[in-house]
Image (cartoon, rainbow, N blue to C red; front, side, top):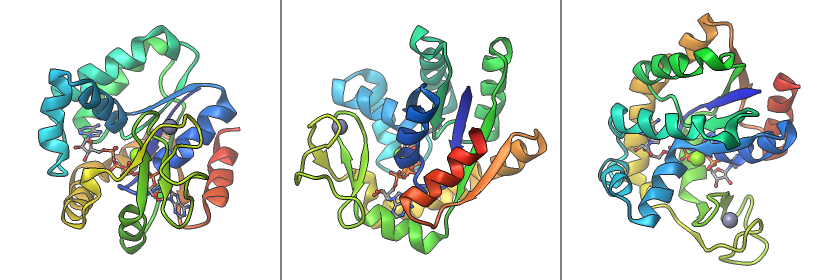
Length: 212
Ligand code: AP5
Ligand code: MG
Ligand code: ZN
């Protein structure tokens, strides 16, 4: 099964991708995580992406599409995947469609809908594992050991783009460039919309119900 997670910054895409990948027994990635992994390895792609990410704006399409296509085509993803944060505009969505043409196409676009006030509250308290990118929240879902990832023991840190002024830009960019994809996937008959304002478990249950 091939699934994407659509929704504004802080909607819970990364949080829910972990559970969905486990249930579907498929791999997962977020385009943002792929950029951050490149940055921590010091690659040119990572350094370039960082100049956009730090401002909260989209990395250019050619760079993003090339990186994500390489991930999709890797043998690990042959059994399906959960992808979060890609596509992020109509041009990326069309490139993605083309890329999946010979692979049976996309099965579902899961849209997590959350209001702006809640997004800001979540992102201001978010902590992220530097190693496996699992998201935590300082009060809602903290790691069991302070500063240490439950899943891999990696260091838990605050993303630089979770600063209030960058969060504002990310939400604005989402509304202008990414939100049109909700209609794009609705018209394609692939959209499933879930209210993202319940607990992590409730939202997860609603998403799982859409794909099982
Ligand atoms: P990316 O890493 O994709 O960030 P994003 O879309 O802004 O989304 P987030 O990761 O911030 O939110 P999320 O929905 O994953 O929420 P999470 O589960 O962590 O992109 C970063 C940057 O990379 C972009 O700005 C851009 O520059 C670049 N980029 C990435 N993809 C690109 C593309 N395709 N094209 C071009 N550029 C691209 O949850 C958030 C917090 O809320 C956590 O603390 C969590 O614990 C908490 N939480 C989750 N669910 C709940 C709940 N139900 N109740 C209470 N708290 C909850
Ligand atoms: Mg994320
Ligand atoms: Zn980790």
